[in-house]
Image 1: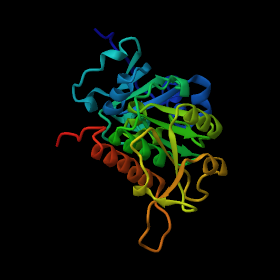
Image 2 (image 1 turned 120 degrees about the horizontal axis):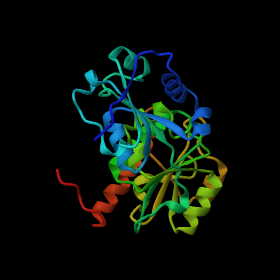
Image 3 (image 1 turned 90 degrees about the horizontal axis):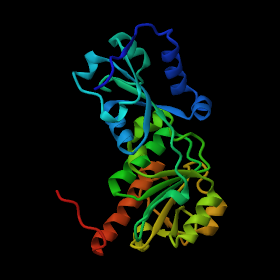
Image 4 (image 1 turned 180 degrees about the vertical axis):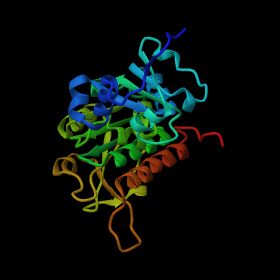
Length: 274
């Protein structure tokens, strides 16, 4: 049984100001170890992954009578009007639920990987939308982890969470340095395949049935020399047009699904039911 929610009617309420500040200020997110999740679907993925809610803001008229998830029983519950919800929501259609969530940092040594893991690695990718899109592809392809190396944005940026549709919670995701990632991958016996134009072979000519890390960088600068030297192989996606690169999220999706195709053909993983 949930306690009666405290009603908030003013945008000047300190709790509303804090919520808005957490959405905009990455330094405040780091300082408080809190971040904001908006939407019933994303909140469900978040709580299902074991994150804890500190506070939940709900608009009954937009929630459509939906009950709060049982995992937020110990959180502070606040009721807001539709007008006030419109001020604090990043987007429409989020079912009238926004929550402040306690951050949980995952380390490389915390990853519990299966045999022949499939891992996506991003180096210094700045745009939250690109990282979010890669996380969606990683979830869809059944990747076992995503490593975000030398990040230029934090994992709990609202734009990243929104772009991932909650996949930032469904796929184990670790922020670390390039050096830390390379050392860990080598110790774990995972083959490193770097996506690059130089000295590379078509991606479909490389064996991805064993433990594989697919590494991608930014479209402007590509990968650092450290990754190029550490690679077990360099792969590229053949381009038939006049441009020489794809968006990093599109490239990563293609490469992840090539690994899936090879593993299905080898009988390592089963084809999903249609």
